Image (cartoon, rainbow, N blue to C red; front, side, top):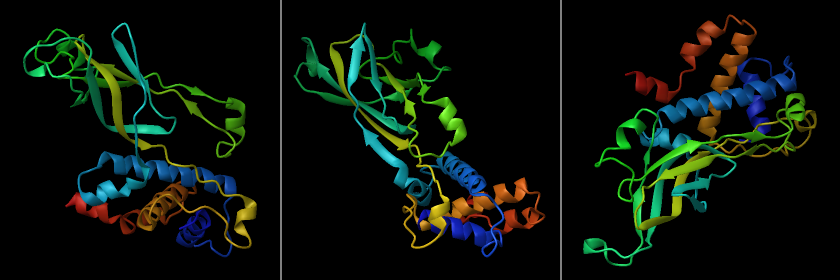
Amino acid sequence: MTIRDLYDAALIEINKLEAPSMLLEDYNYFINKAIQQYINKAYNRYEINQQATDDLLSLRSSASPDITTVNDESTAMLPDNYWHVLNCVIEFEKTGSTTGCKSESKNMLQPARKLTAEIYPAIINNAYFKPSYKNPYYSINSRTVENNILDSIINPCDDKIETEKNVKLNLMVGKVKYEPITVFVNYLRTPEKVYLKEDDLYGEDRTKEMEFPDYVCYEIINEFVKLLLENTADPRLSTNVPINQSIIGEISAE
């Protein structure tokens, strides 16, 4: 399904295919909001079952950013398209002499757990749970946006406007003779913006394919229609919501 196919399907749903009454600026706003709403709902049930996982499969990505260690504090910069982390695995390298079962000179992989503000005070002095190469933790910090704010207000969907995000991955591994050298992160990336121009409505369809499968696009259209009907106070809103429930929603409700 292309971006224009999505637009035509949205017009069919609101019975405005022959006489569209909404501005393209309104459509671009509501369709991107609908995409965000849908993927937020899908993320809340991510990996409950295979279909829930497949819904966001096109957004799944991985990265292995470089680790910087200063004063026993290890950090890594996540990609600009980072949205939500799924898991984090750290590779350690022996940097000193050890004895016992860990005396061999081999790198080792350890899964890192998310460090929340709630559990942090409880682990820093706990011998069993404090950060170490056997029990590493990660946290996400320092999200900043550096772009032209004025241009973003004028046209938030302009492809020429690039948003730079500095998302830092903090790693807590304690003071040991194993140093973190690589971090492997699986994450969901930020969805692409949908932007339809006036010229895209006529002639041969040259718009890009949607990054989601068709069945997900139909779910996004459902979200779009609900947003538009509510915005215009359309009486169809009372019947549209119960009729156009997704299959996932019905299964989850049982």
